[in-house]
Every structure is written in structure tokens, then in C-alpha cells.
Length: 406
Ligand code: SF4
Ligand code: SF4
Image (cartoon, rainbow, N blue to C red; front, side, top):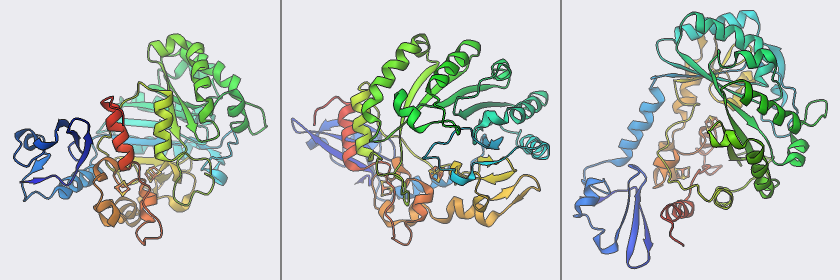
């Protein structure tokens, strides 16, 4: 028998230790002298494994299986790439614009969705601002309902468009959740998330959130993009939202989800990004009840067959960050073409198993090698992988989970 390659040992006081296995997710507190290869408990929970076991193969098998699995479809559809906002950090940059999805593309989307109706379909309405293309959303949703196709939807919207027509149909079209971004308190939000006309948006979004909650059954996830410029004012925003939407926080229809602005490889606009450790400290300071252990991570949408993005012009994308950039498309639903070579390159071109640092990393099963686009830039050793976790962070998470002071 041998100790698992994925055991992470953390000594604590009184000659005890915590051991976490990143492959199985098992965690155990035990006396340090019981950490031996003949301990039955450790064997049962796979902290100790037979010498013949190749653990990296186990993770690789699960990872590759997830790439090819199609138990359900996750389809992101942009009815338009147009947006009425002008956020300085928008990754869509010059790709914002173009037309609202036309009749020909809408018909192809219907045919495409029907061809996937053997499995449940989860749709994400995306953009640009998806509700600028409400007619396309309505047309496609009516079709899915009339064909009895099993689906549900969410929408990533800037929250500025809330017409009577939308309020009347949002539940009928099975849109269960909206993600709306508020980038800090009113002053900070309005300095970043303005209309193209320069008009501020904070007050209108609050008003619209009230309408969505009052006239529909939808849940709202308020996303707050956190960086150094607004992390200090997060408590003020949270307090304000909790008083404004008190009953909806209580019944679970509103939640706040702070998200770090990611410092991605080659991303020049991020001098204010928080490191992963800094973001964890931010979470602990602001949401002390939040205790979690890292969980198993598989491949992202770029790699998975079950994840498909459709642009307003019918192009097929694999990553939200590619929307609107035709050079990144893998095909088109208009003529049912897929560039298999390109799809394969995204899916398996550079796997974490091809990168030395990841192969020797005990955190691989709970990291998955980070963003697949970033990982593909590591292969010639020009860049380091964009790790989503590190040992000091894992240690903090585990000690915090057990409420043990460092
Ligand atoms: S990206 Fe970093 S943390 Fe993740 S597996 Fe690779 S080396 Fe480990
Ligand atoms: S992790 Fe990276 S490659 Fe994967 S979907 Fe997100 S941005 Fe795209």
C-alpha cells in the first residue's frame, strides 16, 4: 500500500493533523502518529491506496469522460451582440454591435434545438444585452413550448430592460434566473456601468429588480465584480441590498454573488485584480459564515461537447469570451458545419495532463488546470498556468472549515 499522491497534510496542534485528499474530496482529522499505510480508516477513504493504482489515470478518465458526455445540453444563445451599456472592461470590446438575430438564424436555432431535444436543454440567454433581442427570445421560446421540448433558461442581462411584455412572459418562457451586475455602491457602479449615452444606471436597475421580483417568480443573482477599486465598499452595497430586498433575501429569491475580476494570462487591463488569496480574504471578511472546501473540477465549456454557444449570426462558439469573434467560431448552425479540427483543438489540444506543473501538482483534481485558454498558452513554457487554488489558500480553507486558528 502507499499514501495517495493527492493527500495534502496539514499539521495542527496537540500532535494532530488534517489530511485532505483532492482526488476523492475526503477529509479527516487524526493523531499524526495514526497517519500510516496500515490505518483502516485511511484505506477505506482512499488516503492509502494499493501500490499498483495509477491515480492520475483515475482523474484523467473522469476528466475526459466529462468532455465527451452529453447527458444534457447547455446552450448559450446571443439574440444580439448589441449592448446599450458601455462598460470599460467588457471583453466583447469591438465585437459588441451587429444585428438582432434575423428570421433565418432564428429558424436555424429552432431546427438546431429540435435536433438536441433528446436530452434536457438548459439555455442561457446572453449578449450583448439579450433583452434587446427579446423578439428572438420570444419566438424561440414559443417554438420550444409548442414542440413540448424539455428546457429551462437563465439570462445574463445588464438589467436595464424590463418591459411589460418581458414581465408577462418571463415565467412562461421558463426563465428561472437573471444574473444582473452591480459593480459596487451607486457611485462606483455608475462610474463603470453607464449607458452608451453616458446616463448612469444604478437607480434604474434597482427599480427593475423590484419589478422582476414583484411581477414574476424569477430569482435574481446580483453579481458584483470585485477588484481593488471596489472591494472596500462591498459591505455598503450588501447592506443596502439587504434592506431594499429584505423579504426576497429571506425567501431565497435574491442572492449576492461577489466574483473576482480575473487576472487572466495576457489580460493587460487588470492592475486592480485581486489575487486568489486576496479574494478569499475578502470573502472571509465580508461573508464570515461562508465555509467551503475545494471540490472536484472538471473541464470547462471550451472543452465539453455538451456546451454549445450560438451567436446572433448563427456562428457556433465554445467559450463565452469568444462570442462575436468569428475567427474563434467552430462552425455555423446556418449550414450545419462544424470544423472538427478546431473543436478537437479546443477540447483536447492542450490538456492539464500535457503541462508539467499540473501533472506534478497535488491540487490538480480541485483545479482542473485553470482556464483552458490560459493553459494552452503554457505549453511552450512562456506562461505559467493560471492556478485557481494554491497550497496556502487550501490550508486556509481547511482550517477555516474546521474553525481552527492558524
Ligand atoms: S493550474 Fe496550477 S494549481 Fe491548477 S493543477 Fe496546474 S499547477 Fe496545479
Ligand atoms: S475557463 Fe477559460 S476557456 Fe473555459 S470557458 Fe472560461 S474563459 Fe473560456
